[in-house]
Image (cartoon, helix red, strand yellow):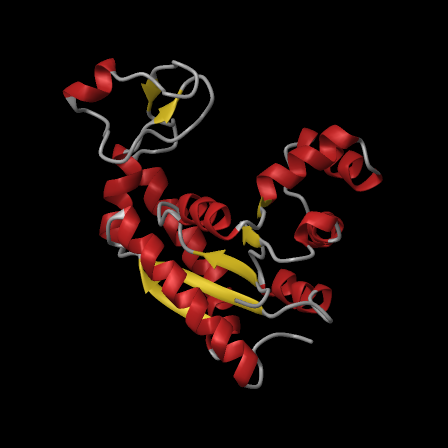
Length: 232
C-alpha cells in the first residue's frame, strides 16, 4: 500500500491510544502522541520545549501556536517521512488547519474517528485500572472492584493496579462534555473528506483493530482516486 498519514480521533475511553499503537506496530510507522513529544521537547531543551516547560510549570495549557510548532518539528524527522499516526493532535480546528499546511507535499492525511456511546465510555473509564509503577493500562478484562484486580501485577514492571483519581463518574462525564464541546467541531471539519472514516468502537479491541485497518485501507484508496483526499 502507498504511504499515508493517519489522525486517530475519539473521546476519552474510546481506546484510540491503544489502537494507534497496535496499528503503528502492524504497519511499521511511528505513533506520535502529543504527550510524548511534549515530554521529549522539554527533555531535549529546544527553544520550543523550554517555552512549553515554562507554560506547564505555571499550570497553564500549551497554546495552539506552541503545540503546532512542536508537532511540526517532530513530523520533520526522518522516521515520519514514510508515514505516521497522530494521537492527541489536532484537538482544535485551528490545529487541524495548521496540520493541513504542514501536510502540503506529503502523502495523504487519513482520519479515523472511533465512536463509542457515552454510557459505554462511562462504564469503561470508571472501571479501568492503570499500573501504579509505570502507568500502563491493565490487561483487557481486568476491572476495578473484581477479585482478580486485587492480586494482579503489571507484566511490565511488577507494579500493582490502581484506579486513576479522575476516573470517577462525575469527572468522567465532565471530561466527555468538554470533549463534545471542544472536539466535535474538529470531527465536522474532517467529515466531508473522502479520507474520513467513522468506526464502531464499542466492540472488542481485536474487532476495533480490524475495523481500523479496513477503514484506513478504504480511505487510502479514496485518497488515491478522488479529489480532496489530502492536502497536497
